[in-house]
Length: 551
Image (cartoon, rainbow, N blue to C red; front, side, top):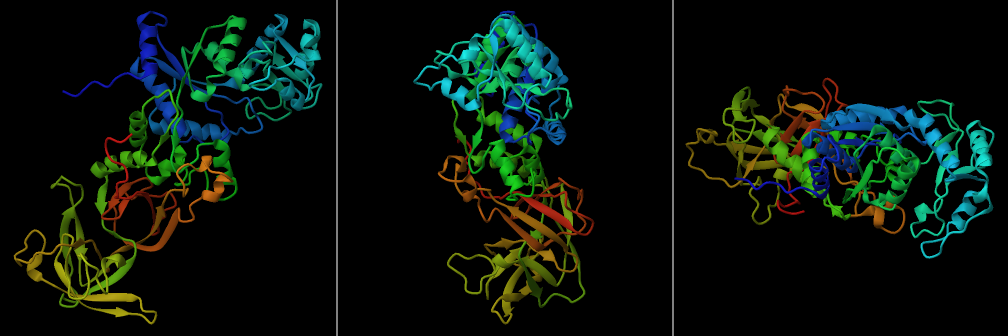
């Protein structure tokens, strides 16, 4: 009997709240800002928020935090919804922070009326200076003691467009002596004359994240507002606003965000990679975005498995990208159809095989399933990998070399008799003889060989483009290195092979279909494919760098 998985600390909180009758039903939310595409770090938050709701018969809202009109686009909204659905999650309600702009404005007015907010004319530099430092307390300025009537009038003028960007802000009046610098009269509204993707030009003042976040949670009656650890200092402010506005008491809880080796998770940095042309776009298979992973051949279940394996922690740590690769490899090993593909072709000619003869041979299609087979053709001229021939073999070389024998997978044993070179000294073709009695499944030759290689029939092999993706960065943690993170981009992160060969007439040859290229790795068909011009992306190689049991 398998051991029951222990609860993470957030599940313990939820179970306690339900047991004590604090809530009849839990309601979580996923609140992305539509200023970029979702990445694997968001997937962890998605799996946690939606997973909690599924486990405890609750629900999850999707709420777009669209309070910064200068960076937000409808394209990002659409991509986020597509990624969520692809991952297998459905939300009960779709909201936007902009849905609440009128209500948030009234909340701000209520704080002013209670003497808990004021309009400040100071420059951003002066405000920062007066806030002090972690070791020096802040200082109150002359605008802090404006009358309630003056503040209400000025705030209304701000809303009506009477002032320029940066000319005034609305600040909460809390405690300039607080140890927590976020409680030192934080800005809750700023002026920004920018067109909003949903509200157009109705507003020229916009709430800050800390003012919109908790109040939006409260309006929706979110029971468990789950954030990453960097929001721990924000929790006091979250609670302060809810307490003094006397609204539904949503509660914030924090967990460790996902940091992964050989990549960056900052949207700002990812946007740089896109805008500066280091990658082809947000869905470039080298990107850690959900759309990039999808295009590379990752499946929703492999990403959910990965998020489950890394768990929910209270401390930040760096997760090895090899664990993510292990999850997709483990899945595809059981589900991906096998395929023979030659990436670096070398012609092999069987001199003693009949000129116009073609055989149909049976080979496996899935491992451990003898009933699941496919037919391949075999004739005199074949393609093999260049790497499977060595003119002067090294010690323990078990593939082809002059005078050496090898088995062609699901076919015959062949012996290398000679080879030809071009003017540059490159081997262009090898000549072999075959053992007719050595046919796979009916071998009566008595000959034993140590090597088996894959091959393709040159008569009907189909040309393909193959894109070999490697890790985008050369160093484990590029964001922590000195200097520009882009200096550590791996120049060999993409190799494009224009003249590879694959088996003809692929079944289910549509974008996203998965295959194991025997001895080469796992690949999927890219959306750039066209009839007669198929393109494959390598999802992951066959070599393991992650060991089961590692964290």
